[in-house]
Image 1 (cartoon, rainbow, N blue to C red):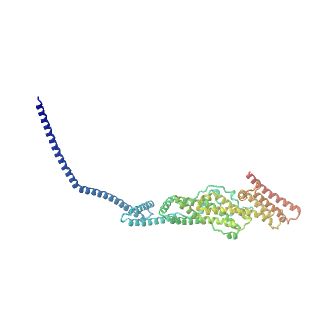
Image 2 (image 1 turned 90 degrees about the vertical axis):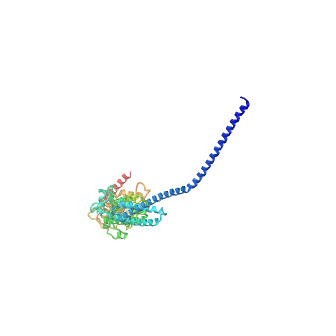
Image 3 (image 1 turned 135 degrees about the horizontal axis):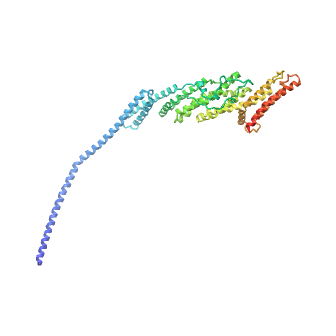
Length: 497
């Protein structure tokens, strides 16, 4: 094949390639034109669809708002429904079903809080006012219910029931108040017959009622009616407590009353007062403390103050009796009842500290402790006065038959009773005469009693005729007095060691 022929073939192929490229360019231009028309159409379609999309979005938002509104309406209607049910229960009152009534109050309180936090609701103010008014009526009915339940189950305690709560060793025997022994006309010392026992306070309010009172009190406190609750409970329980003490026999005694009263009558009243103090502190006050703690459990701000005010007048009445005796004119025969009164207050000191230990009760607690000190001081002074009374005794009547002179018998009996009270006297003088050595104040004072009797003895036997008869009488007196005192000192010395 020659060169010209080869060149011809190449030209033909180049022409074929050129035609193919031209055709491809034409097709490409056509596709670009077609695609351009599609873009224009899609843009037009998007423009046409945009209003529809906007309407669809608005419809979707409207549906969502409708759902929210329906749910809110459902909640509001539910609150209205619960409020109507609660209102129906409250209008019926708490008598039929107290538990259901308390639940209705809680529901009504919840409804009021709901509308208070949803002020945007058009009728929220009206509904809220209605709920609050209804709630106020409900709490008022609760106050009435609390007062009625408390009053119906608060009755004065009969004395026999109180005495039955004491152990046998602490129960006063029939006619024991004011009983006197044959020697010296002094009552038998209680410590010789009474042993410490366990006291069981009576149920001042039936136990089944206490939970109801507690629930009512809690609702009233939650509603802000603390003061109404305070007054209702205080007035009711304080009156019942005072009535219980009056039925027991407690009465007011002034210093002037004690001065005017015959000694036998006053002595009997003091003996009764000792029993009353024990019953009041161990039974009545302890019982009041127990129910107060149960009713006001969880309301510490009220509990202690209410107990203090419930018991204040009763405690003051009891202690004022002791104060009147302590302030009355001293006389030797009062020493032993003063010691009895001092003993009972010392015995009750732990209970008084426990019952009246709160800050609200500090005044009564200090009153009781100051009376204890006052009785101790008066007993000390009376104890010392007896020496002077013996020395100044001006009895000139002589006993001509050789028996013991009345003054001597009186001193001997007095010393015998001191022997019965030696532990109390020792406690008393240890408290108020600290620093005394082994030879106690009690022993020294007793020796002065006998010394006073010896100093007075020439007067008491002056009427005897004959030195021998006088000497025999003196010897008998000396012997009896010394035996009694030596036994007393020996026992005291043994107890100290």
